[in-house]
Image (cartoon, rainbow, N blue to C red):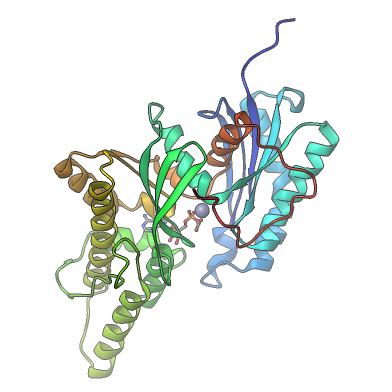
Length: 342
Ligand code: KG4
Ligand code: ZN
């Protein structure tokens, strides 16, 4: 029997509040991507409760893996290796995926590969843009991270800028909560802002002294909270849609400006976006306009691949696999895992 040269990976993601499993062929062909979102369980608390997240992952992970294999029409024997997110993320949540992946790797005698969550987010771009190859610049914007990264090659990253305090998704969620929106606030604020005037309140666009590509969002978040408190104390009415639009303008402007300035500085003509906030409609629109003006080709993952999912982990896992990366069964979950940079 002729051996297939195709590499098919089973990927698992459980770093936060999505339990996900995917089957990915040759890095970019997604045969299945099952995502079980726990949002309903965490909504009542206004944020992710780590203990509940871990328990839900345990409850759902086998089912999600089974569905991923069924939808992909693959048996476990047809899988070449198992890959899993091992950090950064919530330790108890990560441990569920890592434990299951290690158990499967041991039982099936298949290679095991731990994947960095941010590398997964970046790789989502390869799935949605089949022609995309490094080098390119990538703006990573999620609930826990804000980075401007130069992707020199597969697995070769250089961090050009990062947040000094809050991640932009975190700022979105906190501001959303303060104007009475539910959890997660980012997508709700995105929707509400469409009805507001973005020039209604001049919120500050924070830059970091001496580090022009770094970000800071806690000042902006505090400015919004102060504005709301002042309105309440003075008995002045305010329009939540105007506040949402004005906050969003301040946040998005900085993200776009820094990305375009890095593209000019490093003379790179390709830029990508990744992470949950990359599905934000205003950010997508403004980035597109700015990229066009500057002659930069822009790449974006489709929205379902912006938020946490296992297909992106399967893509990152593939490029690690073909570079010979293999992990031992002593690999642990690392909540503060750093991206290996050059
Ligand atoms: O990448 P992700 O699923 O998880 C992390 O790795 O953090 O990102 C989740 C974050 C949340 O903060 C959520 O509010 C934000 O992404 N988000 C959005 C939108 N969709 C998700 N923020 C703004 N606009 C959106 N449309
Ligand atoms: Zn994520």
